[in-house]
Length: 370
Image (tube, rainbow, N blue to C red; front, side, top):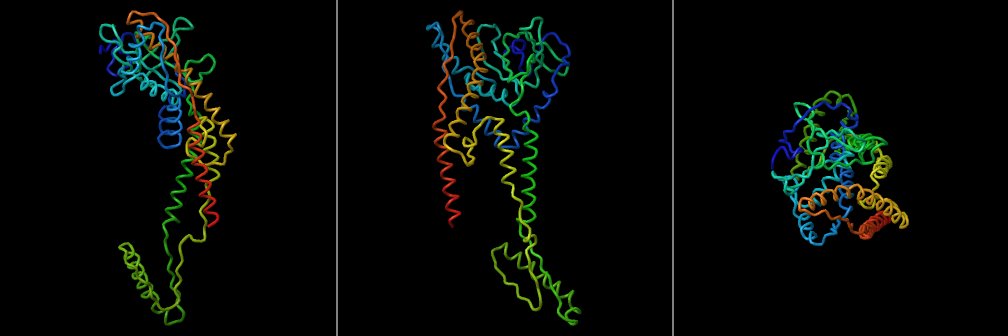
């Protein structure tokens, strides 16, 4: 691949440079969004579920002679260093769009500009998008150690923004607002771990109470003997040997912290998860959460999710169409293309989720009866 023709590749050298200062402040939150996704598994599961539920599609060309070549290109085009097919490219592209609110890619041509050599998923944090000479024109700049360099082939750049504000270029991450909730959720989990370290790992308090003056005279020696024997019994238990503790006198043995109850975290954790899932628009039953839900409520949640998936499909359609038209034009064809998406059917997911819900409810009833 020729470096001048692939401007998003790490080894690129492009002409023209300038400094770009008009970046929104929230663009520097990429590391924060990555951290939230890594530390809260349910967020990563929800985003991955959304990407998989988008489904597949078929591309249709008005020129039937080009249909087979176009299908073969969509199935076998190289993507980056490890991927293959347009579907693999769109999975990474949509992932970036959801997590960061923006996604960028590039149509990579060969050295002679005669065919598409592959597709490249760019790092949106390395790209700046600014208005061009006209309202409909965009310019792309690549951050380098030597400054911001203008990318020479904007027609090969694929860029999408998620729900950009009026008049804005950059989109808003699907995770916006979640880091504050995730921070509280992680603190609750951390406190649960600390409480189990303190109270879950049972420790004993052995108290020797001398009964008369003769016992007081040897209290120190007897306390040391009791401590040694107790320690030896505890060590023997680690090896599977059970030892009885025999003593003479008034000795009190209690479990440290037995009088204190572990604070319940069910309600605050559920409230936080409800806020997070409402932002992600993913029904709880799709993530294995056995919350009380009626059949009608499950159907309504599935309908809401379907509308969200259709919205993401509309964001991806211009990218798919641009890739297809670029391939056809390089092959000498100026025919039109259409995209036929697979039908979104959440029935199987709903039935599986309801089966898990009924199983969890049955187990809860059995436990209450016992």
